[in-house]
Length: 163
Image 1 (tube, one colour):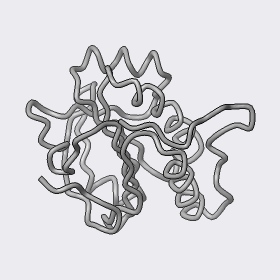
Image 2 (image 1 turned 180 degrees about the vertical axis):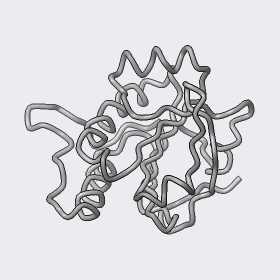
Image 3 (image 1 turned 45 degrees about the vertical axis):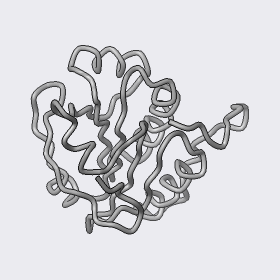
Image 4 (image 1 turned 90 degrees about the vertical axis):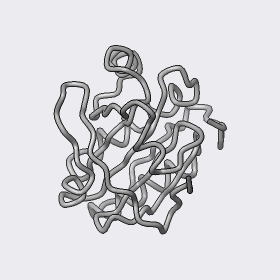
């Protein structure tokens, strides 16, 4: 199992969302970049990170697809999304975590920015302030405007938290 890194082609996948709709990475990439975040509801670093991805989603969601890929069941994932204010699509990795394994994920959260050509431009594990800022910069370039300031001046945010 090799970890997918920036500069590599993202593995294609299709998963069901919590409401049973199908999501295909290939189809989403036809519309623009995709931010894919793998998470587990019991992970404190996931709980910390996903609300910041929600900020990005609120700014760039009309120009990029955002998906959370849960390693938990539908009920627990719904509760997690409600509790942490996650409104972007949550997909459910299947038994044995086949999509997580395709990406070589050993720790969560794992966040990927995938360009429309399928190449991973940002690959991040754990919480990384710099990586989230890079995602914002890349998405800002994609839409032709200055990047969103992901973090507010009054927030005390660490540079990194391991997943």
